[in-house]
Each structure stands twice: as structure tokens, then as C-alpha cells.
Image 1 (cartoon, rainbow, N blue to C red):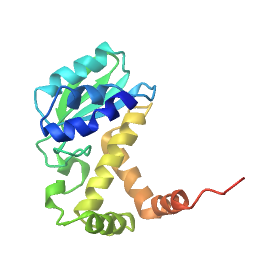
Image 2 (cartoon, rainbow, N blue to C red; image 1 turned 180 degrees about the vertical axis):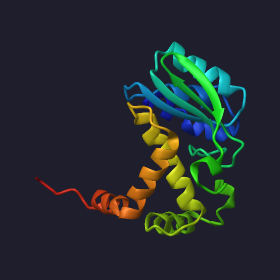
Image 3 (cartoon, rainbow, N blue to C red; image 1 turned 180 degrees about the horizontal axis):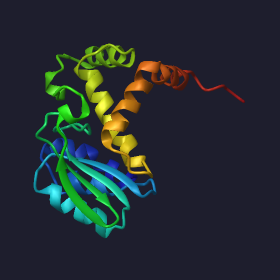
Image 4 (cartoon, rainbow, N blue to C red; image 1 turned 60 degrees about the horizontal axis):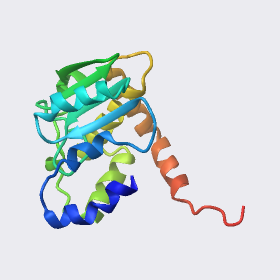
Amino acid sequence: MPELHALLGLRREMARRTVLNVVEKLVSPVPGSRVMVGITHRPFLESVPAALVDLGVEHALVYGAIEGSDEAPLDGNSSLVRVRGGEAKEFRVSPDSLGLPQVTRARIPWKDAEDETRYVFAALESEEGPAGTLILYNAALRLWMADEEDRPLVQWVEEAGETLCSGAVLELLSRLRQPAPVGG
């Protein structure tokens, strides 16, 4: 939203968390009934899902995220709250139950944006490692949220893994990076 974006400079200057850090996650210019919200403070695992239920969101996933990131960590200690049919249910997902190793962004040894890019592209080329595991897990969470049949999360991990290994993700990324045709 332009109004929230206009406050970005002031928020950075203040270098403090404000109510906007929470509210901006609930205000979306994109209409829809499915929402994923990463939060960094435990008390919001109750209030944010309750607000989403009050806002009429049909499907939502609220999860403990790493400060400054919208990714769900796979550390075995993170809580997830799933909103479905007007009810919020909190649970934890163990990495073992999904056939994945325990991993957080902090375990990826990147030093800068260029290094991060190398790790991400290596993961998209099916190189095993913590970056690929986080990409896989977060992709599976998003697919799970879009699921109309309510299949288990582990099935979405398998499907996301097959897609990642197929090269389809790199192919799509390559097409998206192509310059748009001029005058067409």
C-alpha cells in the first residue's frame, strides 16, 4: 500500500518496531482468502490468527519467522497456527516428520547478497544443502495453503521436491528474467 510504503523511511530512521510491523502484515492490497504471515514475537501467534478470523480470512498460516525474514524456519521449535473455517489451531512440525533435516537461515554461511544468490541458484539446480531445504519447506507451506483437498503437508514437501528437481523452477525463472518485448 502506498500509504504504508511512504512510512518506510521514517521506520528505518526510528530503528524501532512499531505497531506498523504487525499491522502491515494484515493489510494487503491483493484481495484473497489465503494469507501467510511470518511473525517474530510469540504473543502475536494468538492475536494475529484471531484478527485474521475476524477479518474473514478463510485460510491462513501464521508462523514464527526469523527477524527480518518472511521465511518459516525448519528448526523443530517453530509454531505454526493454521486458520481454516473460522478456527485457529496451533501446532508444530518436526523436520523428521517431513523427511527433512533441521535447518534455519542462520545455518547458511552466506556473507552478502552475491553469496546468497549463489546458494539460492545452487539450490534451484538441485544441489543439496540448507538453502535448498528452506526453499523446499517454504514452497511446500505455500502449496499446502493453496490446497483445496487438505492433503498432508508431507505430500506437498514431496511435490515441491519433485518440481525443484525437475528444473521447472529454473526454467520459469529464466523466462521471467527475459526482457519484455518492446512495442508488442
